[in-house]
Image 1 (tube, rainbow, N blue to C red):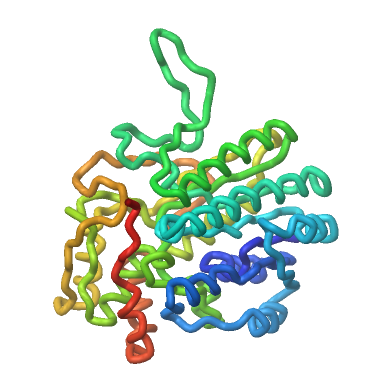
Image 2: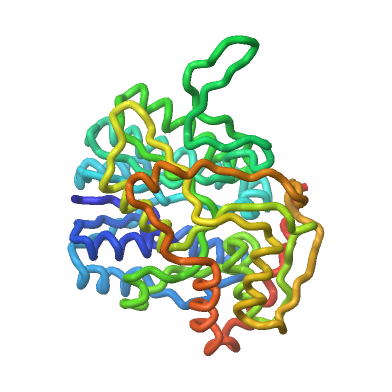
Length: 383
């Protein structure tokens, strides 16, 4: 297939390009390097694992298969993305061109506006261009389980639900959302936008609601050493990755509140696995195919304990007041995750395996990571 990957320079995009090239697909990458810019300029941070420049990647990727690259801001350059989709006419478009950070979206009004505009308007522009130029193209995007209410106290269904209310049963509807940050609001809005336009224009759309992605390993990256970025600052670094870097630096692992609140997790390799399954199993026209994806779920205390068990007892834990609007005590947590398994998905990498894998990459360059001491402690408050 010809596959267009929007956000091809990112954490997931870089790994996905390599997987699809290895499988013989023609890949067209699109990016505007916004993630590089805001991590470096606004967070004053860097990838803990050094990453290659895009020109260097292009040469490497073209040695792996048929690859081309376009620089484009999907959200603001509507003519640019229109021209790319019109010219390339891909079989599949995978939209990873998102600002994927709750803390970043809560830093300021300007950051909130940028996150909302980037994630919602980008989605809208892509779908309009699909309608106009390749209406049979399969649109795939990554949602987030953070769109749901983690504390709803009922099972979270995959995509759709029917409700019995006052003696009547509802028609099927999207499972209710209750986002946990302005970023998650942008993803929730995109979910409803995709649902409406898919029904209106009879499009084929898949929304993979992924939990927290961790680690650095994929089969291809382990071979090529073309690593995906590995952020640990409070906006770019997800909890497992941030804890690993904190442990390498010898600073306490910052657990929010009681640390008993649970979240779902999946490895980078398994995130890529799900997207490959989506490529091979297009949605029906006019109905969004929704999958929940997580491989394991744990409390924040349990994640910290895993880091201690793998790296050693010199690692300390510091419980701090949560900067977020969230409950950090015990709660019911059960996501339905059946649809991907029915299509052959099997988890391949555990949190402990990734802690060890990344630790062994980082520890030889420990001294180069010292500047990250200034950014791994959270300061952005939801309030």
